[in-house]
Structures are given as structure tokens and as C-alpha cells.
Amino acid sequence: MIYFYYVKDKYGCFSNFSPHPIDLDGKLWPTSEHYFQAQKFVTTMPEYSEKIRQASSPMVAARLGRSRKVPLRPDWEQIKDDVMRKAVRSKVLQHDDVREALLSTGNKMIIEKTTKDYYWGCGEKGTGKNMLGKILQEIREEIKPKFS
Image 1 (cartoon, rainbow, N blue to C red):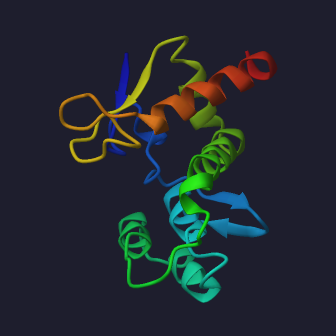
Image 2 (cartoon, rainbow, N blue to C red; image 1 turned 180 degrees about the horizontal axis):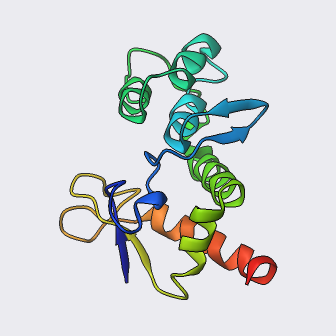
């Protein structure tokens, strides 16, 4: 199994906080976290979405994106996995080091080792959905034929 969380760790490039800008939807996003968080508001509050894109760090982008003082797009729960998939796929395809790290994991399970997030990560008890890890594994399978 491959665990990741902190950007400075061996597989830290899998973190949405890693400093890998992505060119997506006609804009440059400092990190995949900036992109993901901004998409929550792109249809309801485009100016707030842009504020997130320009946030000084992924932590600030995350904080802004988690605010519930601004209305989320109504379809967010239905599309959030696809938004994450699009951001992660872009990062993997646009950065050789991330792609090589992902392919180096072979067929191992990839787990975001978080304590609080039971949706994107494994959570403190390891019983979370680990959706970010699953998306990384999906993308690994997609790109293997082209890059192996």
C-alpha cells in the first residue's frame, strides 16, 4: 500500500496541496486544490470562484472553499468526484514527476492517510471511502497503456 498526505513525503505529489499548477478550463490554477475548491462556486458565485483561484496558498483556497457563507452550486454533491477526477488527471498529465510517481506505484492501493476526512481519505480509523486514492488508481490504469 502507498500512503500519502504531506506534500514533503515521498508521495506528497499526490496531495492536492502539492505545488503543481494545472492549466484547466482556460485558466492557470496554482494547485489542484485551488481548482477543486473554486468549482464549488463557479456557477453560483463566479467572482468568489476567481478569488479562490487567486488564493495565496492551497490552505487558503481550501478554507475559502469550505465556507458555507457562500452558496454552493446546487449539483455539487453529484459532480464533485468528476471535478476531482478532472483536476487530478490534468495534474498527472501535465507534470512528468507526478505521472512517474503514480506509475511507479504499480498495482498497489493508494491511500490518502487523513485523520478527519472520511470521504476523500481513509479517516482516523481507516474506514473512510478514500476517494482521492481511488481516483489516483483509476487514472493510473488509464495512463498505463500510453506511458508504460
